[in-house]
Image 1 (tube, one colour):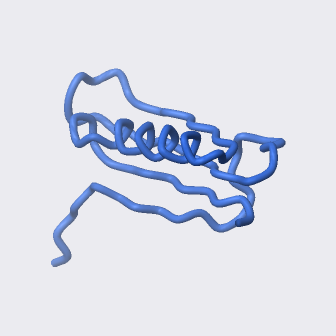
Image 2 (spheres, one colour):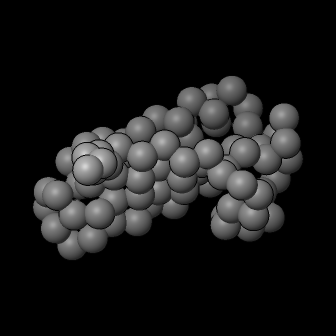
Length: 80
């Protein structure tokens, strides 16, 4: 497995950061090298929230995703 970058995006209170943390812990339990970087606004609920998780078999040199990341998003905006 090469390095895999995942950015999870959503609003505060949707479990965005928790989902990234669960993914990071599960990957560590399976012997992978992991970085988890949360980012969120000052609001308690409804503000922006996202996290970057990088999973690799080899040590991770930079916590920034360089390859095309997977991008699950919890935000929903109706299309008109």
